Image (cartoon, rainbow, N blue to C red; front, side, top):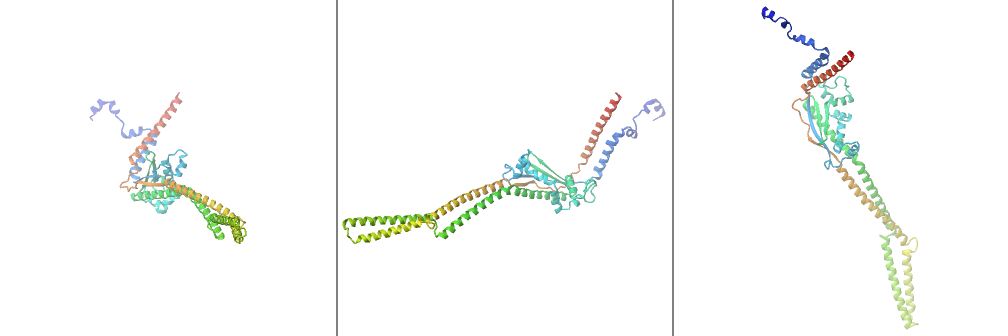
Amino acid sequence: MSESRLDYLGPLANSSLPRKSERWKSLPWGFLALVVFPTLISAIYFLLLASPQYVSEARFVVRTANGGGVPSAFGVALQGVGLSSAQTDAFAIHEYVGSTEAVSDLTRRYNLSAIWGRSGVDFLSRYPRLGESATKEGLQRAMKRFVVIGYDSTTGISTLRVNAFRPEDAQKISVSILNSGEELVNRLNERSTTNAVIDARGAKARAEEKLASVQAQMTNLRTKERFIDPSVTASEASRIIGTLLGRVAEIRAEREQIASEAPESPMLAQLDGRIAAYQRQVEVERLKVAGGADSLAPQVGVYEALELERKLAAEDLTQAAGALLVAEQQAKRQQLYLERIVPPSLPEEATEPKRWLAIGTIFLGLMLLYGVGWLIVAGVREHRQH
């Protein structure tokens, strides 16, 4: 620009916009320290240093055999605190994923420290990072960064996401977690249904033992007394007595007829002998039925008591068998199943971290923090002025 031109502009030339260096100097140091520098550091980390992570995603549902209509025993207990049936069935799996038991199961199969602590991984993403210990508890806390499980209450579907620095590592850890979840569901099934089934089986076994004991007593009684059924034997003895008494009546009638026609007939003595013989036989048969401790009467009482006990034991056995069948059917209806809707995927590209989203989130958060702080400081200054 010519000197005449500069002279013409005069002060306007000196009041031009400040240079870039002057613009930076005009920014408040608080803004630079709280917003600009942290955002710049985060941008350097996420764009240049952060290691790419592969995410294997799987979806599953925990349901009962009838499709979820009847909650499991474990679910019934948790419904008391306001959780739905579908939530309670999946609740155990969610809690298991973040437990030390899950860490133990995974470390028995894979070297998690080597998988999540591979060489070349940045210091903030690897395990163990600054502040984490190389212990089981430290690994459990680190798993919360690499393994995330969520639940959709509208569909009852759970989503498992596993992060790793190699796609095959993410997939195999996801598969292992689902396999361990299925094993946990099987253990829950055993715990929740075993008590009812065991009680029913115990009642059935006791009924069978009681029935077998009564039948053994009846067998011993039959063997000892040499009869099958004393009541039947008593009935047969009663028929014999009745037959003998009928025969005595016939002979007496015949004797009366002969005595009326021929009082001195020698047949009368013979008929009297026959009558006496029949009467003695009647007495013998009566003594067999009810004549003392060895007669049929007390044996019939013992046998009838055993028979009643046998019928009651048989009824108990029938009821116990029915209760066992109901318990087993109920147990089957309450069985939990982990059904994989979407199997663990093998990622083809790294989707974490979301670099620009993370940088933008940090910048906006710092701006909000700075703005709130600036308003507070401005308010304090204004209050002091007044």
